[in-house]
Amino acid sequence: MNNDIKHLSWTLALPDAAATEALGARIAAGLQSGDAVALAGDLGTGKTTLARALLRALGVTGAVPSPTFTLVQHYAARLPVSHYDLYRIEDPAELDELGLDEALASGAVLIEWPEKAADRLPDDALRIELSTAAGDARQAHIEGPARWAAQASERSHNDG
Ligand code: ADP
Ligand code: MG
Image 1 (cartoon, rainbow, N blue to C red):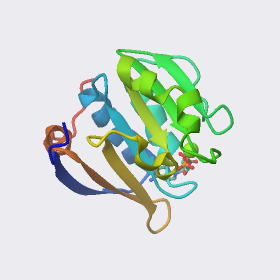
Image 2 (image 1 turned 90 degrees about the horizontal axis):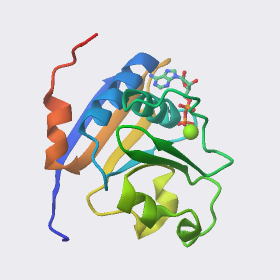
Image 3 (image 1 turned 90 degrees about the vertical axis):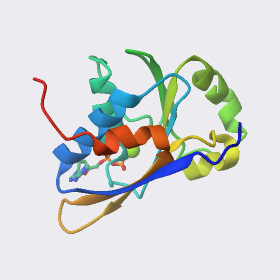
Image 4 (image 1 turned 180 degrees about the vertical axis):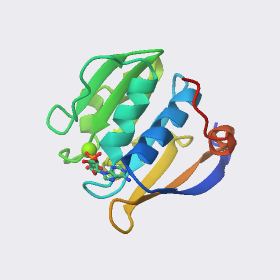
C-alpha cells in the first residue's frame, strides 16, 4: 500500500487563467474515485480557478463557490467530488468532522491549502503547486503517481 508510486514530475507554464482552466479539465479526465488532488500555492495563484474548471469538466453545472468559509463543498458529477479549502482549520483533526475519509471512500477530493492536512492525505495524492510568474502568468509543478502521466502527455485538443 505504501509503494513509492510518485513518478510524475511535471512543470507547466500557465500564461493566463484559461491555461489554468485547461489544466483543470485535463485532470478531470483522469480523475477516479478515491483520488486526492492537493492544490497548493499562495492566495490568488489559481487554486480555486483550477478546481472550478475541473468540476465543470466533470459535469457540475450549478454554482461552484469557493469553500473559503464553508471549508468543504460537495458535488455530484461524473463521480462524487468534495472540494476543501483548509486555510481556516487549526488542527488536522478537524478533517474528521469535515468527513475527509468518507469523501475519499465515496469519491474524489480536491484540497486547497493541503499543508494544513499534515499527513492526512493519501500517499498517492496528485500534488499541484501553483506559483506566480510575471503578470497574469502562473506556473504549476505537478507530482504524483505514474498513471497521471497520461494527463501530462496528452496533447491539448478541443473536442468541441
Ligand atoms: P486561489 O484559490 O489560489 O486563492 P483564485 O483561483 O481564487 O486563487 O484566484 C485567482 C485569480 O487570479 C482569479 O481572479 C483569476 O482570474 C486570476 N488569474 C489571472 N491569471 C491567472 C492564471 N494564469 N491562472 C489562474 N488564475 C489567474
Ligand atoms: Mg481558493
